[in-house]
Length: 386
Image 1 (cartoon, one colour):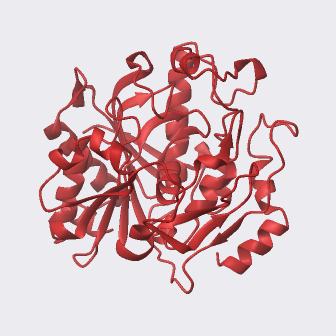
Image 2 (image 1 turned 30 degrees about the horizontal axis):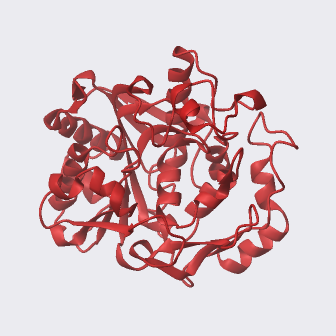
């Protein structure tokens, strides 16, 4: 969608329609009015058929293996078998090489978008990242053309990725600290909206996404999120690619719906994100995205693979809701005002409390934008064994 088309849509209130009608518990008085939202992508960028929802719309491959994580340690040989099995099942290819070649060309510069937020308790497992790197290299991509990246350098430092990933691969933090400046970002590609009267109303796309990498492999983790409901494939891409996104949620309200999906439509992010590999070795069912409380983290041993981030996040949302039910915690769709607390310590230690009225409806909203399928009845969810 080009800038002119979306500005027109924003003025007509299409973003508001995305917000309402997709969240079964939303009330007219539960959020401030959604402002006009302007998106500006890379002019003239030719959309790719590999872009979201990708080659296999609505298909999600899920593998569960309890032995993949024991004593909070991930076993790499088991993860390797899980990933290889999932990749061939997703693509229908007989060989693992053929599966990777569906998405990656030897001439590509491949970005691996990790999620170090929440390290060391729960972040993209280095064991899985190493296997993804091996898969990319098997197609003929040299290490120097593989970039493991995220927004914040310090979170990547906590996850020790520099020490744990193969030499020759670039490891890049787009920002060194919590700043809203445009260092590391492209000033001509942005999302502009004034949500809560903030001084800086634009969020800019990372230059590494807009101008350097040619393909992105997205590696989210399975976590709830205090504002968006869950941190999944969509949020890991959107809020990990654009800066100045914390402004979209001001307690107790959140505009993560519809902004997460809208950001994922911006080119070239939409076209470059060709594969999503969800690390569910650990499943955070409360306190996300930053909790370190082990009582809220299950060692689930799950791996999911898809090209459709909406379908993947729909399955993830179901898994987190199931875990919360099993632990007697309220749904992430909870809208009870008494559940809201301004005490961070209380939130991190009481699963009945939250900081925001969460917005898991962002997943269905992204589906309405054409990024994938959110109706569970239409999702080809394949639960297989390694």
